[in-house]
Image 1 (cartoon, helix red, strand yellow):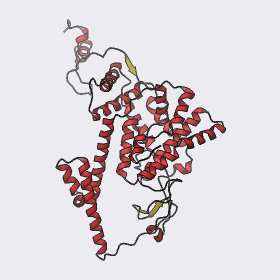
Image 2 (tube, one colour):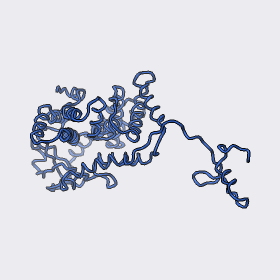
Image 3 (cartoon, helix red, strand yellow):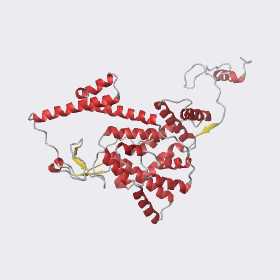
Image 4 (cartoon, one colour):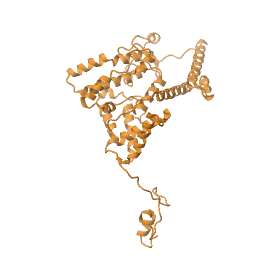
Length: 403
């Protein structure tokens, strides 16, 4: 044993040599159990070190923004959410990042990130294209490593057509699964059977429509059978859910919705409520909501607001933040009035994959995006202001809207 090179000795052997002859502790594993200790070589090459405080930086920034909201508004934010979650999705996303970041080592080999970047380059160049689910996962993991070890402005590729199609398929699958669950074992059977037999998600959606139609017919039959419906509870005025103003509804209003309000709905606690539509929103179908969103973020309106902020003496950064918040809040408001929860969840999942947050990009991500394009300081802030009025032409075309 004395002739064994020092760099080849196990930790147990080193301990036994250095101790007295009356005590020879056995080798042990890192988890405290007895056994062999394996030697290994530390990876060589440049290392990437995690900047102190980077894990909590995003959460502290989001929390500071949240605390700017008046206390009487913060009281209602997060109503109905699980008590274990943060009050907003932005805070929850930042908290999730913080926890994942804190689980990472203080430093990693630079090659670990370089390898992923090379895989992305090979994918974009067509040298080694990946399936959409793998490319999206690779993007997500690479972006996370960059956020932890190399934060700062960087270029990120937009979602490709194949990736968008895959996400749409997953969203449709999620919506179909939700529909099957809501329809139950009887009326959800057509959709479930179609999926088991290998049908496409479009065919499953069509089968769910058949099940829904059968459900409506059965409900109508029960109604015509002379069964007296249970009396509807009276509304309770002055309530608020997730910050949306609720209005008391009379029996007449339940049958004849007032213009400027949503259709009456029965809440889980038996309260009949309606929501006042935002100014300019005509109805809650997807096209009307999209038209409101485009008008609310139109170039004319954003320029009018920007001129107002200039007159108030606000800095370019302050104006950019206000423009970003105007667009961001319009996005959340539009989604809150959509009727199909599955469609909303699909949009949130798309944003989660693309931006790391179900509610879209953060202001800092916008700064980084334009910084990667070579815009710095006031030029980047002006680009954010100008971009606040640009909406997806593809999504507008889906509803026959030209902007």
